[in-house]
Amino acid sequence: MTVWDDLVGQGRLVDVLREVTAAADRMLCGEKTAAMTHAWLFTGPPGSGRSTAARAFAAALQCERGGCGSCLSCRTVLVGSHADISWLVTEQAVIGVADARDSVRRAALSPAGRRWQVMIVEDADRLTDRAADALLKSVEEPPPRTVWILCAPTAEDVLPTIRSRCRCLVLRTPPTDAVAAYLASHHGVSPPLASFAARAAQGHIGRARALALDEGSRNRRHEVLRIPGRLAHLGACLNAAANVVDAASEEAKPRSDALDAKEKADLDLTFGTGTRGAQSTAIGVAGHATAAKELQRRQKLRAKRLVRDSIDRTLLDLASYYRDVVTVQLDSGRGLVNEELRHEIETMARDTSPEVTVKRLRAIFDTRGLLEGEIAPLLAVESLMISLMGAAAA
Image 1: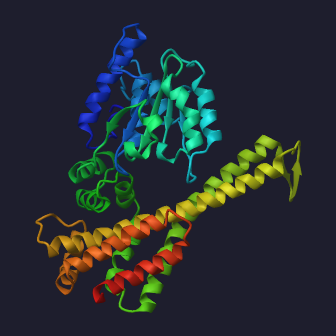
Image 2: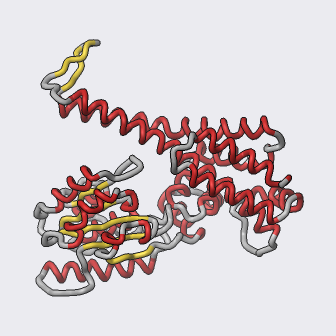
Image 3: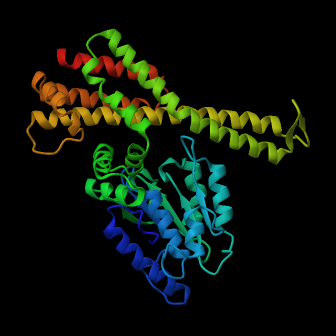
């Protein structure tokens, strides 16, 4: 196995990165080459593997054999413990200027090893204007042997001042058969289940993995796909909306609680706060109250985002259902995402028109946009369910 093995359906990209890695080795030996540059932007749709590509490229840059996957450098990069690989990742809605400045400070350090200092920015589209300005100088003219790798859905999602300094590489949506083969070979998933998960995930590797390995994820999706057939009256719409939001909160809570506990423990360690029996003791707690209050604020924002992310996945599953309906209505000849529900989908296709289905799809994607703002999720989803029911009567 090599560091490239988890890049599913990205053969052309892998070929390019192998060539770049070889050029980077020559550069370390003093050769000048235009193939290797100091700033990269990986773009691609959600689930295509942007962060996986960034990690694999970083490992290959640190490896004496171009990403063998078995040496100490490769292993430490892949598990996130390599001294010369830094990640700028956020669970918040945006990446702030303080985090960006911290990355710039680390980028200015010389590599601990003999090769490269690699700075990876996940979700570079979340950089605030001030954060992007803080990164700009280092991305444009980094110290020797420092490489920046930024990830975003599209190049247009990144500020022009940043993207113009980067070489852009685009990941494609992985084909369904490639995703199914990956699940079978890397996770031991049976072929029928792998095929189902790959098809249902529509090219999203992480989602496919969850559907293949977690029965709870499959059950939640099954419940979501029962919604279109149940929206017969207002009470059903409100009940469906409440179920969607409750399920999203239930799904997000374990992850949110785990992150909160770790951050609280880190804060206590930083300020010398501990517990003795049932009574808290604080040692040198200057600034602790302020820091704790700020941490709680950020944790609340993250908890909201995790719930909204879960709702968004639900909306994409709903969209896949209506996408199948319009596929049947237009007789496009394309396969169905939800092939196991073909009978229900064909029934709805006969009972409605393509215009109605398009209205329903538009309502779903409008709601996704609303959830990026400050609207209460329950209100947004209730409105959507009523729109899905009422579209047929409009």
